[in-house]
Length: 153
Image 1 (cartoon, rainbow, N blue to C red):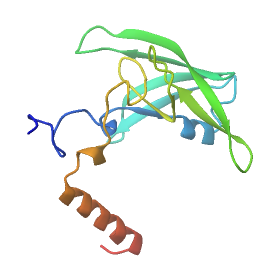
Image 2: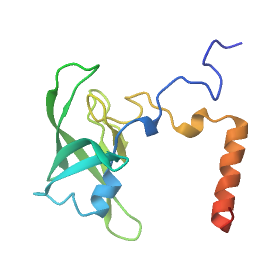
Image 3: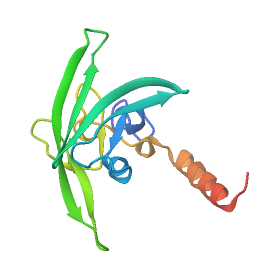
Image 4: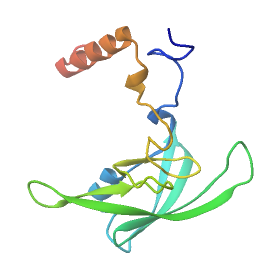
């Protein structure tokens, strides 16, 4: 019925695990969203830094500053604001969210994914890895989760 790549378990879209993620929940938990804070963030692979970004917190926004290049081209400096939205929590306090900075989006998200611009998974057209699993893979993953919770090998 469908063409190549139309079924589950096929290649298709990149996944969220293929990209560098910036999680506002982690930034808030680590106390990094206080206005006036400036800090660096790095992504590691096998203990080696593969990417980094500088972040400056301001009132209701963070400023991202990094360099990127596409297809081995020239490095380009990027600096732009990502606005924050705040929602109240049921037991007090408030929760931070990123507003996707991609043109025309503005979606409220917890995680932005890196590329030429940090944006939500919808703007980058990313799928979750679990969306590419076959029925057998999903069953194995669930069984492994149960084994791990029970402390089995």
